[in-house]
Image (cartoon, rainbow, N blue to C red; front, side, top):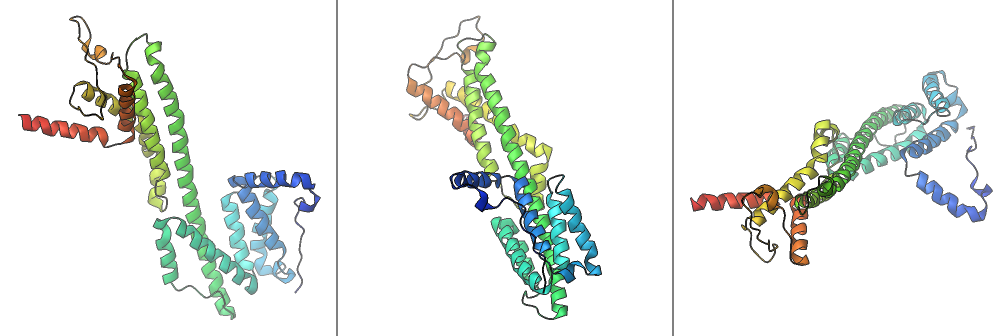
Length: 338
């Protein structure tokens, strides 16, 4: 069986000087991290597989529509980077025209990709179980009817794999967007908050520092929560992509800052007195002073008490339940005192 093997148009590794080979390899490894480079590499492999098809397959009139699709994507790839939809179209076209032996090899590869994609996220493992329970055709099929049944199964599996990967990419992009915007906005807000006393000319107040440290704890907690967000399924993908959900996550550090301020007031009121909590110095108010403003004009006499306060402010922003639990206990104690 004659084949038309086209040489790889990329530069031959042997042409690279030995002293530059290490740098070249590191550069290629760096480029492989970008989705655009991954798509280009995958398209190159698919086109190479297409060019090695037997001549009788490429000249078969029944395969001309699929070949036209592959050629269209190949030509467009010289003008722009291929999209994931382009890759899926080329894969479907190849699966529809591959000879029996090549189809069997592609079947093993495609099913292994589907198995890896579903095993990555526990929520998607039900898809693999449903596929295996459907008793798909054996890859070792030999008769013409069995080969056609295998081809139809692989085409349906390829569509499902493409949709699964597309959903995963939506989730990852949304998660990265939330994390990046949370860090950027929170860093700006924390910087401005810590400088507000100077900008507003309010001297000797600690409220902005308390709020800023609480926001810092909220940022840390938000980033951890985003990284642990369960991927898998259309519900999670739509949840991450909803602007309202994204906004609530991005603004959650501000709630941590407010919680830190509330915790400071509770400490200043003397409701929490243990060695874990700082010793809040008492301050006498004059008759003409603003009690709310003067409340936050506290000077600690030791670095240990200041460190305890800021650690508690960080924990108030980091833990979603710390301040609500404190308030619940205070409310219960107030009910008993009635």
